[in-house]
Image (cartoon, rainbow, N blue to C red; front, side):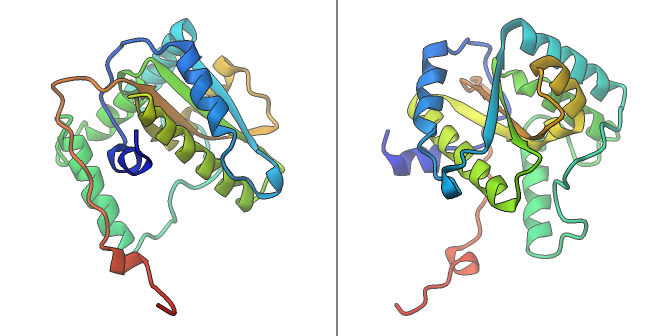
Length: 221
């Protein structure tokens, strides 16, 4: 797959089939992703690939917490700034409304928060979830490195005909995740990435992107 095609076709899929992913495909993707840039070649990411019975157990525990309206574990880092302003708030609101309406959850649904949490806790049906951790001693630069690494992983997954969905939501249930994957207290959960083949017959909304002029300035050209 052409690099441009991989970038354009990558999106956060929220409905996966249960078709299993061959281990050698995941190994190929993750081996190639080690070439992602990292300042000083620290390669600060620690990844746990969860599938099969361990993933089923994790989904079960997380879904139970979601359906019980469990507020979740204390966050170790904020998902978003406390005060989002325009244009960021507008982009966020539009994307949230679009993605969950496609899954049959309307904005005015009183059960919306619980339904959204339960869908996330099931990893949208994905048969594989990658959990990315960083050592607590790492700083903002290494968190940026982890983001570049995960983007590389997601583009390589597209080259294999697979889709993904990065989910910071898993940090809400970070203690449950750590119990299943065995991550020690010296690591901070960055996010989970659900992986699989897209489920057929499900709406495929695409969130818009800001016009290039809103986010890019050319200097000296």
